[in-house]
Length: 411
Image (cartoon, rainbow, N blue to C red):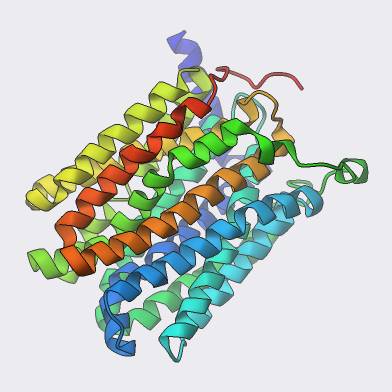
């Protein structure tokens, strides 16, 4: 059994990097990295934005929530559009919108324009994500999707880590505007590369007969998909807010330099790059996903509770454990939609869009609450709240059914 498992993993890794499919997958992974940079490049700049526009700490929550809400609201439309026009087209349009809005954000004349443009950047991110993950899945045969999809999922963490660290380094020299512009420029450059590298057959629109189906799509009425979305609202809020708020927290509370705060802040997101492939392998091999979800969320939640009470080394260790755990969780939730009873491969993009949209809108609300907590009660209370939010939304876990291991069922 171990030999088969290792052989299967080796085959999947090989498919990830070779040939036309491999080049397309690696380009999408690069897009995913820069996409994530554009989520987190604003966090280290929050104090500078307040200084530029004369806003309070509570306004940080509105700025973060605008992006998260923009990304969340467009998730389901992205899935619906992908069913009609194909995942390749919609994901690249979303990536282009993200890049343009990211560059425009750097030239915002006031806070309200920046708020609107960050919402637009989030909308582009929402249009990109679920079609792109379905596109990656379609590039690989059944039974070999765990590692490519898990790697694509966890590549977000590499970009998020770069967003926290690189922008923290850039801001002292080019300001928060320069940090935002870098993300937008890189995104547009990769969109051009993706147009060349991703074959036209990949993520093509479905047959016209399939487009004429009426009624509510199965993915939107699936209790299991709603269960996944609701169960991890707390995780979404914590994974997003911890990375965004850590640099201002470390600079103001611990007095760390921008470079040190950015480096440790990146550890709250970057190590999940390695957790994603592990989660993908677990998903393909085992069916006890409720247990996996609870364990891999509860442990990181407990770790967050300790952040205000420890020093530099302990914080780094906590950050690594936290991000590795949630990286595994996200990979599992993004791989399993085709395994859910009643769903097929064609439902993947819409199912992921729905569950991710639920989580992002919920995460936006959590960001607002956390910003208020920071302003009213301080950072210690905010870290405790993030850990408790993660645990609290796990009450929806019973809505997720037991799913089969191995290859998806025939449809």
